[in-house]
Amino acid sequence: MNWALTKIQSFLSEASKGEGKLSPELVEEFKELCGKAIDRQFNQKRNKWRLRMSEVGRPICQQQLNKKGIKQEYEYNSIMRFLIGDLIEASAVVIMKGAGVNVQELQKEVKTKVANVELKGTYDIKIDDKIWDIKSASPFMFDNKFGEWGGYMKIKDDDTFGYVAQGFSYAHADNSDFGGWIAINKSTGEWAICEVPDQQENEKLNALRKVKSNIENVDKEFKRGFEDTPESYKTYSGKDKGKVTYTGNRLMNYPCTFCGYKKHCWKDAELSPKISSRAKHPPYVWYTKLEKRELK
Image (tube, helix red, strand yellow):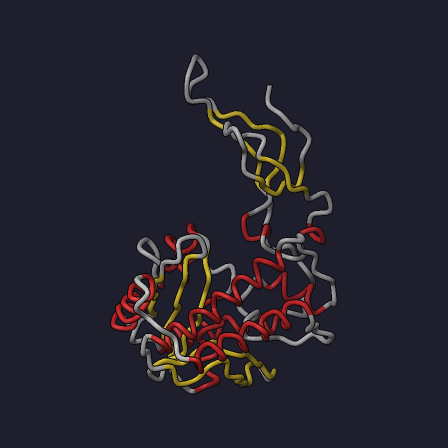
């Protein structure tokens, strides 16, 4: 797919010079995709639990709470993050078409049976007979998952969001190969293509085993999937150089910070500037226990 990335970069480079153009048909398609995106985020509510391919690879604790009907709670800006992701995906689709990438299918719904359960999903795009997932990513995720320092094995080894199971489920249901991920850096606009191995039968089997295991375990007793960690900081100068000090506070595990059920699992969860940070404007982090609010 390096050829596709070259085409995309060339097309965008021409557009930045005022030389690249999108056809009126692609402009109309973009408008339609944007309309669907905003309708999906604001107006479409799921009333009945269904296990979707986009969710089946995620931590089993999330799926258990979802099936029980526990309401997810997100911060007010979350819907904007989801919407921005959808709009970037819509942009990516028309840009790839404008650049001459061979887009065969778009937003196709597929279904299959795993562990006697019907599993449905809608994959993003098919290019040259392979299923691809389009992802908008933060700079950190872009670099460390999809870009220069990432790669398939990096994603597979730390797959909190279930990207691998999601992609192979789509491919299995469509009787196609899974290509990988087309990622766009939300901050810089850079593109990356992260491919799965060409010899992928074992990878697909392992992903489907995980899907089967999650389906079989979704009705078991709920158990929180991640534990919090003690907050600490290290002294880098003076007589206490090298000393590690614990604040007494506890930090939420990273995967939990993105979960809509975090306040179900952590009743006292609180978003606050990081106490142990020495920065003038400390980053906000999620605490599960916040007793000390400043360092002396």
